[in-house]
Image 1 (cartoon, helix red, strand yellow):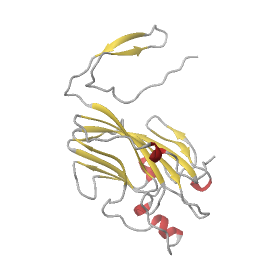
Image 2 (cartoon, helix red, strand yellow):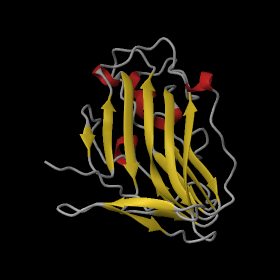
Image 3 (cartoon, helix red, strand yellow):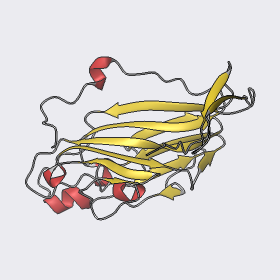
Image 4 (cartoon, helix red, strand yellow):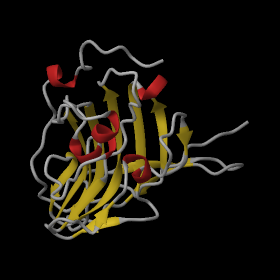
Length: 233
């Protein structure tokens, strides 16, 4: 039996050096062929890891579970978790979003009422791309509790009972590209109206012309798992 893994994103361009790509077809011999760069005017592939632990939520206080989980208004987008903030001309490819549920309760503990909001070229609120919930952005629905793997979206870790522990989702904009000419800010609420305080981390993927906004990798201490929370399983 033969198997193959396909890469759905475009190849990185405008890189220095000589690259060789393995070219294999079923029933035929594979070989190496050179890939030509498109020069300095092309876009470069980028990936950026971010984390906020915990997200800056609001305490439940005297609110009922329903009030805390699904009521309230966010009419600015301020305080959203930022998946990507880039400047220049480019193409947002997609992301992987990881959430560690830090709320310990026997009440309905769904993590995903936060809306996605993507601000393109400095547009004000409301952005032209404003979703209706975390599970909707990742092309699922009704508070999923199981894994699902499609080519461009899915859930690799659905969490434990009552969505406890670790969750991981992915979405790639291959058939619905999101382009920008000046800037892009890809954000998502952490719970409805940014009320939840969970451990969020993400990797964003995009192409853009250079120069890009400077970014680096957080210190090791900031990349370790959040202490005191058992892994779902």
